[in-house]
Image (cartoon, rainbow, N blue to C red):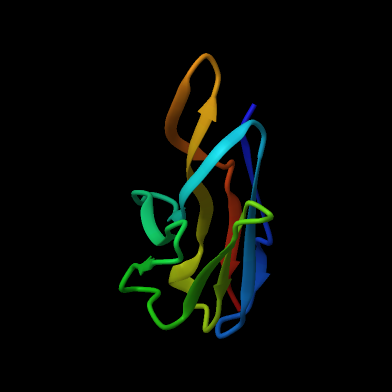
Length: 122
């Protein structure tokens, strides 16, 4: 069973920093693009950042220059380093990974983590 587990969320003051981590585990044949999404109360889930298996990154304009996404292919993890945090960054942050698993055949789809709460407040 494939599982994504996020960690690192918490309470931080405006201007502070936080590092989120996501670890993928299970019967993983291939781990493709990984990313972070967030959803604030009453709002749609939105893309924060993605990173391909080759290291190409993509960021939402709202976090560009403040957040950095990285991955460790050997450990099957993806991190999100967040700095200069603003109250508008408050949300549940979800990890997503495109994963190929081998059952009777190769199957590929997106997997989602359970989310980790990030709260930015004085």
